Structure formats: C-alpha cells, structure tokens
Length: 71
Image (cartoon, rainbow, N blue to C red):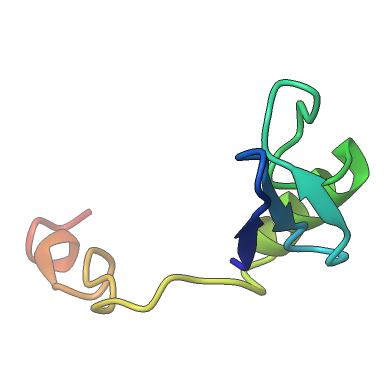
C-alpha cells in the first residue's frame, strides 16, 4: 500500500480498489478504502477467493483422519 505524508503530518494512502487518494484519519471512516463500495468490492474478491495470502496448503480435508474414523 502506497502512502505519503505532507508537511502537516497528514497521511494519505491510495484506496486498494480504485487507487483514489484517501486521508488516513477520522474523516475517512472506510480507510484504507475511499468508500463503502470499494470496501465491499474488496470483500467480495476475498469471498470469491480471487485474493489469497500465500501459505502452506490446508491439509484438514486430505489428512485421512475422517476416512480412518469411518465418517
């Protein structure tokens, strides 16, 4: 996430969805997003698994434990 600070210590970041500049403060209730719309677009991308955080694969369904128990 890109951010810059001006001489008056106001932090400005770019909205992760539309790249509009957003002041990081109380006047921006959806920060780091510029609006509720951008916030919901981002949430939808996570829900549809279009975004993910890299990591080890989830082995909970393929570990064989359920098969061994006869479930």
